[in-house]
Amino acid sequence: MNTPFLFGKTVSTDLFTNRTEEKKRLKDNFINKINTILISPRRWGKSSLVKKVAEDVRSRTTKVVMLDMMSVRNEEEFYSILTTETIKATSNKLEEWISLSKQFLKHITPKISLGTDPAEDFSIIFEWKDLNKNYKELLNLPEKIAIEKKISIIICIDEFQNLESFKDPALFQKRLRAEWQHHQHVTYCLYGSKQHMMMELFEKQSMPFYKFGDVMYLPKIKRADWIKFIETQFASTNKNISAELANSIAEKAQDHSYYVQQLSHLVWLHTDRRVAAENILKATIEITEQNALLYTRDTEDLSSPQLNFLKAVASGVHTNLSSKAIMQEYDLGTSANVLKIKKALIKKELIDETSGNVYFLDPIYLLWFRINILRQKLQ
Ligand SMILES: Nc1ncnc2c1ncn2[C@@H]1O[C@H](COP(=O)(O)OP(=O)(O)O)[C@@H](O)[C@H]1O
Ligand SMILES: [Mg+2]
Image 1 (tube, helix red, strand yellow):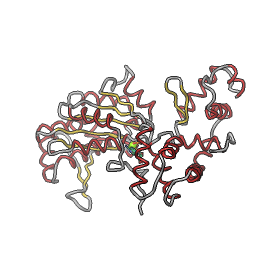
Image 2 (cartoon, rainbow, N blue to C red):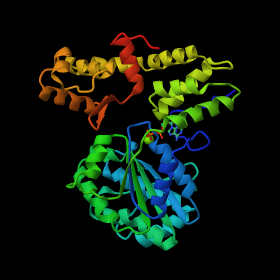
Image 3 (cartoon, rainbow, N blue to C red):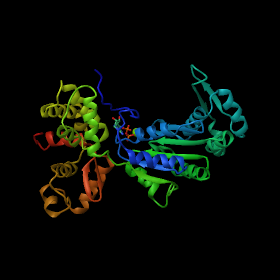
Image 4 (tube, rainbow, N blue to C red):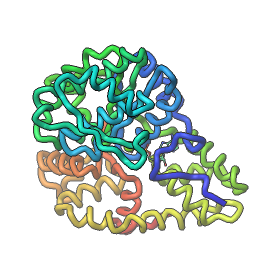
């Protein structure tokens, strides 16, 4: 029998659980043409949420374009995939796009490279020479197509903060903002996992994208929803789990979407009929071991004050990490030092801080750390 859990791929079908409020907010934004910025740590469920809502709103008159900046290395490539994907999402035939492009692109001559199935697969490349002068034509192409075809277009761009790796990110942002703010028929949904970079891009007054749209911080899925989900998924495959043990899975994974699914999957594999506490313990040790290589490397890369700081965080008993007693116990130096350590660890994406609360970003790293560094016994 196949596992009723899924991880490592975006979920949008029956494996997608809850998110009722977030779905509604995003959908309302799409319908009302309000730009959205969606921020959360990686693997909490941004891509899945956007995909799900995109499927809901897609229609004859609403087209959704999905881009991922992860694989885009420079401005030139960005224009190329923006144009290619917009065309693919809005016209059925290559010929149609060729005639549209003749109508709208006055200064740029595209080169089209055809795939094995030319009706489906093609990409459009431009000469950089032309682009630097005439990039506006491409940025405005979606808006022009939308008007011409009497449709609205939603452009979703994943891992948007990746534009920071372009040659001149500030100029690029200014270019985008200057054109996009005039668009009436195109709505943008920009999302990314590097929280601090995303916040910098969208919440800092001096930045071009300041006040570009509705900034949504995606929360974790609630514990009660996970418990229901885990129970239902086990039941659907004729296995059984108590609410208490379902809670224990979500708790170990700290309600982190990816890890709740992965840990549930491992527990499911170890279970014949009815889940016992020891199945969960076994699965939890397994999941830490699967990641051990990565965690060992991350840990070896730490300076000793950084390691000590993580020990203080992982011990979980201290609330004020820059109190004198803690700084002494963990040999952290001065409070200025503590700030520096914290900043470095946030930059490494090992920890984060919200309203004064410092925590491990990866709940499985925390478990691994407790077992292997603090020598705690898992229960
Ligand atoms: N609404 C959801 N219901 C159930 N599982 C989810 C949900 N959203 C995300 N997940 C789980 O988390 C994993 C990571 O989700 P993803 O959307 O790729 O996160 P992100 O884009 O934030 O990195 C998915 O593969 C899936 O296992
Ligand atoms: Mg994603």
